[in-house]
Length: 203
Ligand code: ATP
Image 1: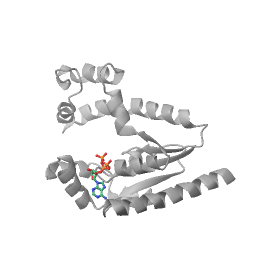
Image 2: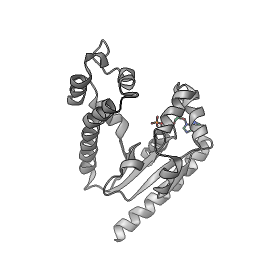
Image 3: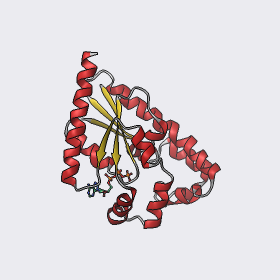
Image 4: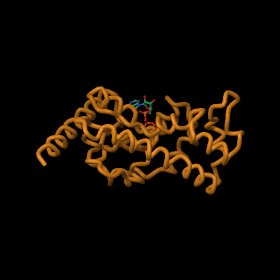
């Protein structure tokens, strides 16, 4: 297994990159998707959240009301810390489990973890950083993802800065241009991955 981190700011194009890496044969472990799975009805994480925050975080069908949670932790550091203490260890355990499942394979495993720039991960061969001018990220979040401009800017402001992320990069994907350019950037990343695999085999 070759374990590689993938990170980038909100709306930078992590999913667009990871899906293209999957087309080239990589196994993608997507932290956001794991969070959603662990917060599904019947899961221990959702039960612990209800115990802490009350039934008001549930929609009538019993699923999580994400906006209600966002509203509860907004401007409440203690609530935000409690939420993190419930969700983050469970997500890390599940990621670790999925990585362990791949340990004895020849697969390239991509860890798509938005907070990787802040938290790191043991055993990664390097980190792919999807880089984009935050102004373009704001435009895309508004145009394609239904964010208000103020919300997009507020979310970006809570994350690691562009410079902090770039300082951790082994290879950078420039996603400031069109999708054709992104495809060429992903080819460049795949060549880097192949060079890492060769280095790992020769070690
Ligand atoms: P999040 O941080 O919310 O998980 P993300 O980093 O995974 O987002 P994507 O969902 O891949 O980002 O991209 C954000 C939006 O921008 C999507 O609607 C995507 O289709 C679009 N997008 C990504 N790359 C480009 C590009 N090069 N040109 C135009 N649109 C793009």
